[in-house]
Image (tube, rainbow, N blue to C red; front, side):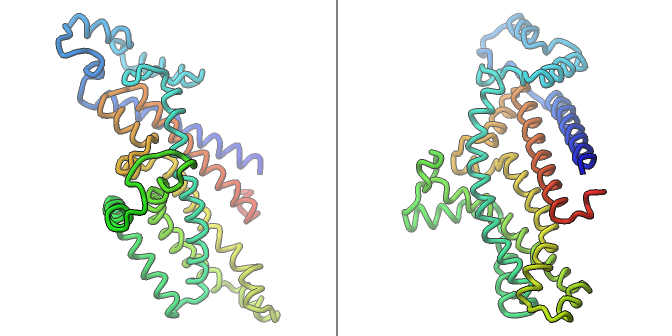
Length: 309
């Protein structure tokens, strides 16, 4: 098992390195002048050239990249030209908001989607199954922007029971309700559908038939055999969705004015803040890979057969 974990850690490091290369290349290919927001419109060409030299942008791309890579290896994420402060400090200020909303949303998704998927799977073909899946498919087909507008229309304009936007952490939970719903509804639908399909597949296995032949009740079969084995694909897709949320839900953060890494990344891209964009993408890629690693480890405990893969 240790060998499998080390192999996955190596894959994670390779993914992060590839993201660092791609983010560096894409930012250099993007149009625009990174010094435009740092200098007044009346700045001379000599001033722009001096700033280029100060930022190291006059060096060849290979030199710039290895200088940036060396900073990453030593924990230096660079200096933000937009916020005029270390990139690590800027990300540290924005990351807690994204983590807070994402993790709370992920918990609610887990509590809602898994029971829906299991119930729909064990009642396959019934009216309960049809009703639950009809609701789930509708959720999955709705646009995030449309859901955000619908939430604002219902809870803010019509009912006037929730604040429209803002973020105050856990001190004011009312500000988190709509972002949590908007960030988790589609994930809830995907996990519920996967749970249903996985439960149906497991219930059709031969060992389930043998369990019934031994005289076990449905409750014992579901709890001891079917539920555990059906959770493997559910945990996989759930982990991927949680990792995606932690990477930053740009639309939700923009609409509800949440000071997370999603809104910060959009602002940094618009202002050509090379160090901030590159380091944010690397950090989010590392978070994504770390969550996947945790999911892989969790699956190996559920199904020991995977430990040797």
